[in-house]
Image 1: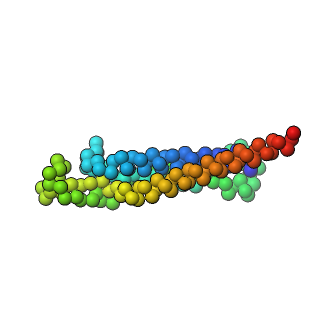
Image 2: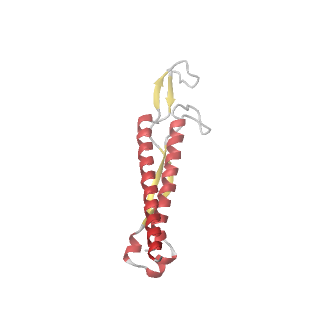
Image 3: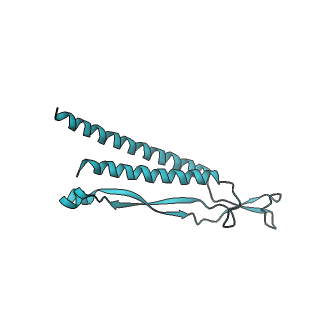
Length: 145
């Protein structure tokens, strides 16, 4: 494995976690949106992550066992939560049905906050991994002095 493999893996994770954080932000911002262009209340969105082989020139040349085990993360899809909207009784709301219930987004603010903490911690861990790889590279360069 070359030096840049660890950087590529960590950068793919940083990108994936940034996408996840953007979706969480969107979910929180629309937690009370009862109207969307598609009609009906906002539907919670989530990212689907997948581990994919890290491909680069060095791995293709060596094609070693370790190189085949290195995986990066990719966001393969963004899916809408299929849970039904929660119904809230508010007969004065403009979107209330004849029984007085409003279809509210299926966003649980507490769950989103927990997901935000998880995404933040994962992002921080990958920043630390990038810094460690950079530090190792610098120490390697110092050997030649």
